[in-house]
Amino acid sequence: MKILLSNDDGVRAPGLAALYQALADTADVTVIAPDRNCSGASNSLSLNHPLRVEQLDNGFYSVNGTPTDCVHLGINSPMGTTPDLVVSGINDAPNMGDDVIYSGTVAAATEGRHMGLPAIAVSMGASGHDHYDTAARVVAELVSKLKRKPLTADIVLNINVPYMPYEDLQGIRLTRLGRRHKAEGMVRGVDPRGQEIFWYGPVGPERDDGPTTDFAAIQDGYVSITPLTVDMTASKRWQLVDDWLKSNG
Image (cartoon, rainbow, N blue to C red; front, side, top):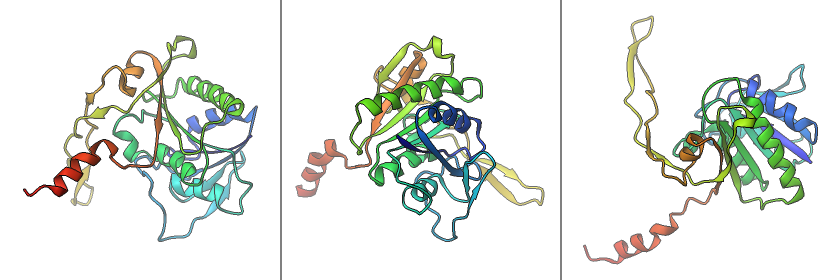
């Protein structure tokens, strides 16, 4: 199996290295990742400047672009053969609920899906560098399962792994995305030159963390696996909008 591995924390992130080590024993893994941290980049593309690729001493490819750029390069350029699977991570923080809209980690995986490949995005359930081996082992096991029984290419698996040793995991849950309250306000400040600046404040707390959500799974010590689709049609709201359009009000 050929795997294209990327992330949004940057090509030198320890989570990327841990995932490469776990997958390289059983697959042909090519790493193409941003040259810097691109958290929150979502599905953005670099359309206004050329992409430059540098191969590092460890064989990883560093790109002056976004996670989406990296995956697009890995699949749709002369850099190598077409992979069988795209894997993105390990992200140094959760990507649950509304987070997936902004996540560069998830965006790298969805770009794989756009290019016709099955894809996995993996994130830690909390920030820290102590338990990447747990998430890497979980992903390696799932990739082995995909080898034996592939999923269709229109599915992205969004995986969040509790921040704990592998032996303490309670199992795996199939989950839906939860929801957060709105983010807290912007933080105002002043730069060294006296110019007003703003920083994003903390993300909002969980609003929907019911028992079937990704939030609940992580809280209970379970690996959360949420199947995602890029079809954003609100099918459950179709009739409501249709009735609204046909109404006289």
